[in-house]
Every structure is written in structure tokens, then in C-alpha cells.
Length: 592
Ligand code: DMJ
Image (cartoon, rainbow, N blue to C red):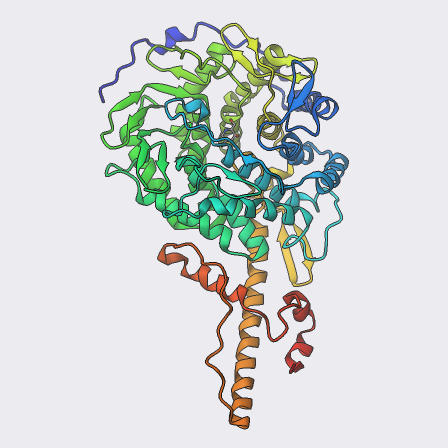
């Protein structure tokens, strides 16, 4: 590899962490109980200020103590912070916010969700807003829906396979579906919630904008019984997979109409990050070996071409030559992801590299030039991102190594010292002089604070290892929920995998009953045809539904289920199937 480190890293760490924070009782390791309280206080300082000064706008502007819309005018900070409330144990506020959201959020609005930046040479803009909107709104609502019983919200009879928050999530997700209607099945980066894809919309989407749907969309499909969401997400994943280069790498931006790579930088950070994250998390959530096999193949190529001294660089996707010897703050999720596949040693080594950068600046600059050991021009800011803390949380669960708590301590001390203002916590515009920007992104409450709290709270319900669970009786049967194994979407909204299993099973049982009914009625109809000796106009066929998008062979099953779902039930299609099921005996007797 034609790349050499020019400066020894020992010399780079000239600045020590800004604070050492309150020590633990033994005088060394940070005391988790102390930091739990500190993190809680951080949360309420920011959350109360958002409610007081910014709601119903999307985000708080902490320097001017007001609010502004950033992603579409959905009170995003409130949706994003909802499950953090429960993780912090605030059941009553969770319940109040659920009511507020049900009464106030409207997805029938003429907004572009939202303007997608196509400046492909400027990766700090590469976080497609479409994907953030999706992972934040759909993911946040799904997670709140699944946690609502635990939070004491009165749930309806069909929960977790139905409920108002689930319906909201579904409504929001349906607004995004037009974006997937492209020749490749890879979605546009922007969609208008009222009118669909704008004519003249750029067909250039970042890789993460294409590959970051499976967690939310498979959850939606499992809970609602409509396979379309999982199907479009899988098609997009397959198309990306088929578009990888001969050396096994993907680029940064692709034309979704032609399938041609427009930006050919391959790396693990901005523009690509959550694609890799969702291959692993999708594999775990759905117990899907193919998704994991894809990730492991990528992992090999990434190690072969971009890995150097436990850092990850950017390379040209076809040649493997280094294009940017830069570490991006967004890349700090990678050690956490490595821990999810059990590669703890590599994860720890890379984490420690990234931690040296944190120590150098008291935060992670957006870009860090690895050979020079310093920030990159115009990328010196730290918008209070979660990624390094997220990795510390996963690695601490895996190893119990106190170094990981030290990062948590440094983060609390640093953020409080540098970014706390009267009306919340402000983005750090420049880590060299600690100048601030008038912005507090919603991920601060959704992710940064949540991962910090979970790092210091080993007995939180989220860390359940299966030793306790809730048995929920639904009209269709018993579901075992809350046993742990939560999968965090990329915006840190936890999804209970057991709910997917529960609702999927229930829907499958419904399909079986449907099959039985269809068989019964076709037998009966044939018998009566035979008896009456009359001819019909042809064999029975389901009504034409919307064309499913093309999908790989292994999703035939999902298509079959889709077709089954669209078939009107018996001769009374207007009556919902669930009520038929409840009157099963009568249905079979019904000859109308
Ligand atoms: C979050 O919005 C999501 O985690 C996204 O996938 C990447 N980064 C931001 C926070 O840094």
C-alpha cells in the first residue's frame, strides 16, 4: 500500500483529555452511578429546553434559544428522543409524548424529505436526509410502538401487530415507497411526501441512502403483514451487492437509473456507513445468513484494501489505491459493528486509535488526517455525534474493559465543558478553539445521550440477556417479548426481534387459515358447478394489485405471501379478515 504514516502517533497526543471527571470509589475507574446521574441531567437540560424553546420545530437552536425545521417539520427531536425517555426510566413523559405525537404529526404535507446534497466531493454532506428521515421517523415510531406497553401505555387488542404508532410508521414509510420505483430498484435520495419523486430529481444517491432500510422495513413488514417494505429493501440491497467492483468494494454514490458509480471512493464512513451496519443488523434481526455472508465478503475486501495499522482509509473502489488517508468521525461506529460479529480484538485496537483522536481534541473532528495527525480544513467541527460512544457501549458489553468507561467519562466531561449553554448543548464548530454553532442535532438526544447512559447502566432493560421476558396475550395467541437482543437502528432506536417473530408467525397462521378457506370454497364451488352443470368464465384469480418490484429469486416466498394477502377473503372482501377469523366457525358455514 503506497501509504505511510508520517508522524508517530505518540507525538500526536499532545493534548490530554480535557477532564478526568469524578473518579470511582476506588479512585480510578469512573463510577457508573455518578455518570448515570450526570447523563440524565444532560438529557433533561437539553430536552426541557427543546420543549420550552423549540417544540414543535424539528430542532433546538441552543444559542438563540428557539427552534427551526431541518428535515421536514415533524418535531423530529421529540420523536427521536422518545425511547431515550423510557431507557432513562421516565414512563410518564413517554406516555405524554405518545399522545402529543398522535395528535400532531401529519405526513400529508408538501415537503421534500428533503433536499439531498449531491456535492459528492464533500462527504460531510453525504448523509442523505431521506435516510435520516426514514431511520429517525419510521424507526423512532416503530421502536416507540414496540416499547409502549413496557411504558404503561394502554395498547389495543392486536398489539404488537397493530397500534396507532405502528400505523403512523406505516403511513410515513408508504410515502417513501415511490422513491424505489426506478429501473434498478435502488431508491432516489429524495421524495416529496405529497407528490412522490419530483420530476428532475437527481438520480444520484449515496450508498447508505440505498442500503439503510432493511431493519425498519422488515420490521414493518413483519408487524403489518405487508411484505412490500421488506421486499423493496431487499431488492435495493441486492442491487448494491451486484454493483460491487471486482475487488469487492462499493463506491460512495451511484446513479439509480443506470446503476453506474458516480463517486468511486470506497471506505467505511460517510455515504456508506449504515449500509454495512444494516447488513450486520439485518442479518441478526432476521437471522438471515445471506446478509451476513455479504457483509463478511465486504469485510474481507475492506481489510485487504483500506485497513492500515488499525485505521481505515479511503481507496478507489476498482484499483484499491488510497484516495483519502482520512479518519471521519462517522467511521467510529465500526468497532461496535466488529464487536457484533465477534471480532473483539480488531475492534478494540481500532477503538483505541480513535480514542487517541478524542483525547487529542476533547471530541472527534469530522475529518482527521491520519498521516498529519491533525484536523482537515473546514472539517474541524464536532456536532456531538454518537459513534465512538456507541462503539464503547457495545465493546463494554463484550469485554467489561474499564478503558471504555473512561471514554464515557471523557465524553460527559468534555461535552459539558465545551458545548453546554443555557438553552441546551451546541454543536462545536471548531475543536481547535471550541467555537460553537447554533444547532443541536436530534441525534444528540436519540443516540449520544442514550449510548452514554447505556454504557453506565449495566442493568438497563435494554441489556436483558433473556433472563426475564413479558408474555403478551393477543387475540391470536401468546407472544414472548422484551427478552433482550434489541437491535438498534442507525438512529439508536431499539427494535425487539421477538416482536417480528411473534407477528410474522401470527400472519403466517392467518395465511394458513386463508389457504384452508380458499381450498374449502374452491371445493365447494366446484361441487356446486358440477351439481348445477354450469360453466364459469374461467378459473378464479386474485384481483390485480400493484406490480411488485423485481426481486431476487430467493424472495419468491415473500411475493407469494404478498399475493396471498391481496386475495379478497371469501365472498366478503369488505369485512376485515381478523373479524372473520374471530368467527371462524360461522365463516365456514357462511355460504353467501
Ligand atoms: C445518525 O443520524 C445516524 O447514526 C446515521 O446513520 C449516521 N450518523 C448520524 C449521527 O452521527
